[in-house]
Length: 63
Image (tube, rainbow, N blue to C red; front, side, top):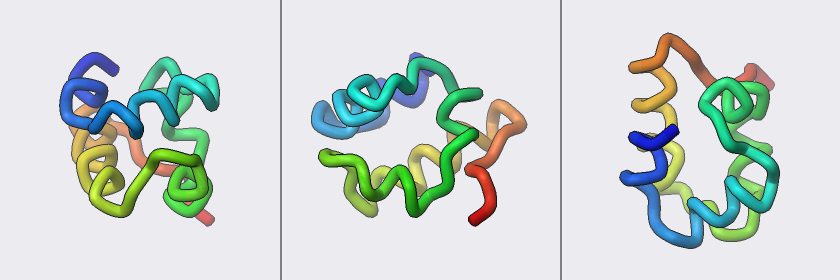
């Protein structure tokens, strides 16, 4: 999670924290669409999140 947080903007980091996401495993339980609805997450954050999830052998939940 440290890798992900260092790559995201402050609003995006707060958005994850505010939604109880404190691990990559928790992030992987959400779909891209769901994460985009979080206040503070922009479209530019999604590719960064995908890349970090893939490094950990994870991915966003399918729609």
